[in-house]
Length: 383
Image (cartoon, rainbow, N blue to C red):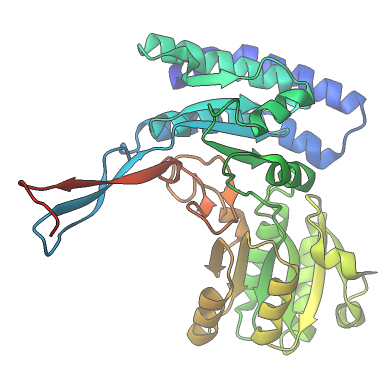
C-alpha cells in the first residue's frame, strides 16, 4: 500500500490541489484549508506513516492474559479484529491512509466516508491503497471509499448498513460528532473536539514554560492537540506572563485574557465562551488561577477530556495533576501537540478517543482490536 501510494504521489497532490482551490474559492476558513492541504512534506509523512504501520507487530492473536483456574481449565484472553469499521471524517485527506493502514493491520476492513471538500484527494488516496491491496494478494474491498459525497451516505453508515458495520468512528467537528452520537445504531468511538489546556504551575521553569506554550499553541494551530487555553498560577504570572505573551505574539498569536491577565499584559478581554472554544486558529485564551486546585477545576468545567499539560519542576504537583485530570492524555513538561498516534509509536491514528469505553487516547492498530477468551480443558465438566 505504501509503495502504491508513493507511485501515486503526483496524482494525489494534483487531486488535492483541486480540492484546495475549490475550498478557497468558497471562502473557507484558513484553519480548514490548512487541514485540507497536502503539502509534499505532508504527503511524504503520510506515506511514511503507512510504512511504519506495516512494521508494527501484528496485534491479532496476541495473548494479553493467561491463567489456570481452580477447576483446571486453561484460560487465555486473545486479541481479535473488531470486524468492519465505518469511519466518517472531515477535511483531512491523510485520514484515508492512516485509517486504511491501521484498520488492515488489525485484521479489519474499513469503509471510509470523507468530507465533500476532500472528495478528490480521498478518492485518489483510496485508489492507491486498493491497488496496493491487490498487488499484495488481498481483497481490494478491505478498504472501501463511499462512492457518494451526499449526506445520505452518512445516514446509511450510521444505520449500520443492515448490520454490516461493527463500529463507527467520527473524526471531525463538534456537529459531526454530535450527529454520529445521536443517530448511530452501532457502537461509536467518540472523538470530541480538542479543548486542550497548558497549565503553568508556580514552580515552572520559565524557559520551558515559554517554549512549551508557543509550541503547544502555534506549531500547528489546526490540529486537535493544539492548546486553546493557557492557565498560569497567580504567583508566576507577573514575571512570566509578559515574556510568554511576547513570544506568543512574535509567533503570530492573538491573546484573549481574563481581567487579571489583561492587567498584567494588554490584550483582548476573554468572555465565558472563550474558555469553551476550540479555536483551531492562532488565538489563545489566558486565565490566571490561584493554584493547582483551581486549574484542575477549570479543566474539569471547560475541557473536552482530550489533552492537558502541566509545566512544573515540582514532582508532587505534577503527580497531582497527572492523576486527577481525567483526560485521555495528560503530560508533564511537554507540548500538547504530542497528542498524536505517530508520536506514541502507533504508526498513526484514526483519531483521539475521548470516551470511556474500550479505546481512549490515540486509536492505533491495537485499539482497533477487541478480545475473546479461549478456554482449554481435558474432559472438564462443571459440578
